[in-house]
Length: 415
Ligand code: SAJ
Image (cartoon, rainbow, N blue to C red):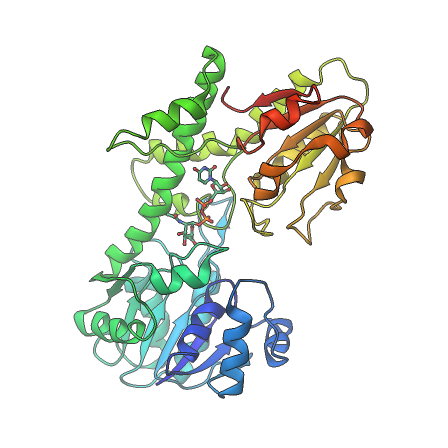
């Protein structure tokens, strides 16, 4: 069948390519002509393992093409971003609604519209349905709508898109069933069927669970610092309990999902104290990290600090909503000279330096991302160019014996 995918980003493009390589004719639509141009030239607009090959195959087999215009199809799949409106503390549905606006002139009887974008409960039933009904057709009588939230993790998208279980919630049973048939073409995980309001809720619950759990870990880290306990050791042993799974503390929560989705649950909830407090705890972690740095370099005149890792998490080059941004701004406000090293990140709002340049004259290295390269890193080739030997590890990633060997003053979040 023919599928028109709207949004050629981190989720839409991989999903489009999986359908295109598993028996479907796919048209990929994006409003950004640069993205479409890149795809027309056969080039992935971003890096994600395995997808360049899928793109090459689908172009060779004529099963995928990119364009800026929506066209008639059997299925329309919406995978556009849902930004967070920070002023209103609500989901900003403008891209989802404009995608539905692009679809309805091409909507025919019997078509299916799938929303993969993360949306607050009841969005399919209300705004999505209303917008699509501008076609003159009625749902569910004339066409189908379902929500099938994406749950793949950036950095391992191909594996997770194929192997993860999925949730499918249609506006009625037939919508759910035909959506299931479609995803069976490439998903090897289980497909759990429910209604669309529940599917919307499940996606938000999963990311909120993680955010609240990370907030708990961060709070435990601060308490442990006050008590002189190593929280990492404590969490490790507590997690041996069959019913305990405490997450990892760190410099805050980044990425485009975990730091945003909890707000979608609280926007019209009467009671949401725990969820909002968790957001606040995680958002305040860069302030806590700066406090630790301040203590370490107390008394140094005109200090220079070096941030190791600005990606929002380990082993990827993605800096969306990274807590490093807030930390760097706070450090600059404090009057520190900040230099940055991140071997994975190509583009950032601050210059990314080579390792030697980044540590030269530095008074403190602050590790903000758990890149594997930091695990193995030994300071022997660069410590002599530093002005003071301090290192703060907010991810429990370095091998401390490598650093203590050169007399580094080592500090760890939650210790
Ligand atoms: N983090 C911690 N401590 C932890 C785990 C994570 O501080 O114990 C931080 C990370 O460093 C990062 C942030 O949280 O800054 C988020 O990272 P993540 O690995 O938890 O999640 P994302 O944002 O990369 O992807 C999540 C995933 N959701 C869940 O695991 C429930 C993914 O499956 C979703 O598809 C994705 O959100 C999404 O798009 O919603």
